Length: 255
Image (cartoon, rainbow, N blue to C red; front, side, top):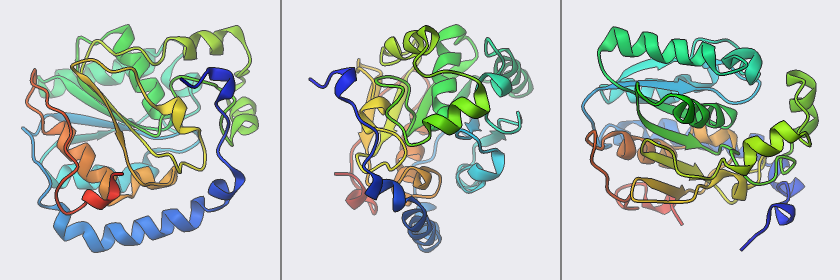
C-alpha cells in the first residue's frame, strides 16, 4: 500500500502535455457529441457543477451543457472564481446557502459534480450537512493523500493564503478518503498532469466507487469518456446503487 510520503506530484512530462491533451479531448468531445446523446438518462433532478481551483463557471460550460441536454436541472456554482475558502466560505457557508437555495427552488435533493478543488469542496459539504444532497461525483479531485503532490502548490498557497504543510491542511487530507454519508464516485486518471492520482481515490463501501479514465486534468471537463461516466452515475435512481460498467461507445476510455 502506498504511503502518503510516497505519493509524488505528476511527472513534468505529463504536466507539459496538459494543454495539447485538453485540446485533443475537446476536439474528440465535439465529434462525439451526437453519440453522447445516447448516454444514460436519469430523472432530471438538480445538479450543481463546481469548477476547479482558480477557475470559474466558464470552465464547466461544456459539462453543464451536456447534463442539460440529458434533461437535468443544471446549476452553476455561481460563487465566482474558486479560491477555496475565499469562495465557498470559511466553513462552507456560501456553498451551503447555494445548495439550500437550489433544493428549495426545485423541491428535490441536489447532486454535486466537482472538478479538481471543486470536488474537494463538494465532499466537505456532504460531510458537514448532507440533508439536501443526493450524490457526489468528483473529477480529478485531490481530497486525500499528500497535499504537496500537485504541480500547483505555490500558486495555490499564493492565491488562497493556505499553507499545504499546516496542521489544518494535514487534518483536511487525513480523513478525506473515508466514504461519505451520501453515495459518491471519484473519477481519476493515472496520467493526470496536475495532481497525483493517488490523492483522488476514496476508500470504498457499498455506495462509494472509484472510476479510472484515460484523461488529462483539464480534460475532466471536456473528455467524452468522463461525460459518459458522469451521466451513468447521475442516472442512478435515488436510494439505489450499482457498480459502473465500462461498456458502450466509450469503453476504450476506461482501462
